Image 1 (tube, helix red, strand yellow):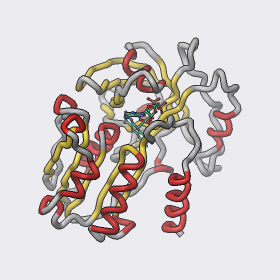
Image 2 (cartoon, helix red, strand yellow):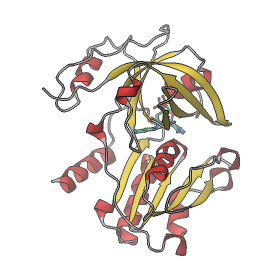
Image 3 (cartoon, rainbow, N blue to C red):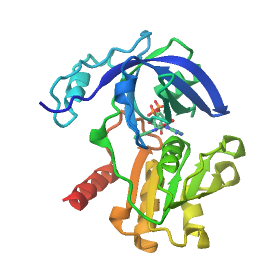
Image 4 (tube, protein in one colour):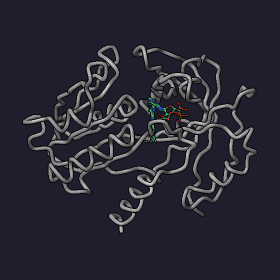
Length: 282
Ligand SMILES: Cc1cc2nc3c(=O)[nH]c(=O)nc-3n(C[C@H](O)[C@H](O)[C@H](O)COP(=O)(O)OP(=O)(O)OC[C@H]3O[C@@H](n4cnc5c(N)ncnc54)[C@H](O)[C@@H]3O)c2cc1C
């Protein structure tokens, strides 16, 4: 019997604007104590209600799901008009004592169902959650000094990585945000962390900031990069080709694509990247 991917209803218990453009939404559910693991970068999919629904319709739970994909067949079996919007998110924190999971939603406007929902969320609202699952856990590359780079969507994961890094690993963080008001406090790391904020309103970009970095990146032996897909792709190329980091020392993930929703199919670049990942893994 394979491992079933958990499908759970989660209920909002608190909403807090941690910056003008980010809502920290806290959820609870009876299943959370069994689901939440003590590891960084726990990713899951949140299922959001369609127009006219107050509660999203969730895919049937599959008892036997060896590759963690049967839930997706069940998801696609829901008629399109009732099928929930599904978006990737990160567990920012889990408070076992209170049984509360916090998720930081980037509020990037009304164009996306997740951003729209996050801006209007109230205690009592219900979402679906698929995962998190250790099936998708990615080990962090090991190094004495590690680069963590990303935009607002990656900050929840970066914060959990900082909390988990061992004392023998120092961190340098490059974080791209809209403007100085979007900066937030990041947790300390046992081995120390140096944080560089990059502001889009001042013309800054993550890729350029890392490309232009000098001694800040001395001794960096591994990197974790996430955020807008083309920026992530460019950064990875820079780190591998110009800064000579081994490919397997760069953990990277495109979290969103400019002008495309998460429902849109893969682009040529996405497919090329998937093929490269598969070739690297074999
Ligand atoms: C593993 C993983 C973990 C993630 N963790 C988080 C997280 O913890 N918090 C979080 O907020 N996001 C996170 N994301 C990113 C999030 O899933 C995407 O930003 C998603 O597109 C948001 O859905 P939406 O419904 O708001 O917009 P969509 O319907 O997907 O897109 C609508 C439009 O908005 C644009 N858009 C999407 N996201 C952004 C953005 N951030 N800034 C500007 N424009 C945007 C798209 O290009 C598109 O034009 C994660 C993604 C993955 C894959």
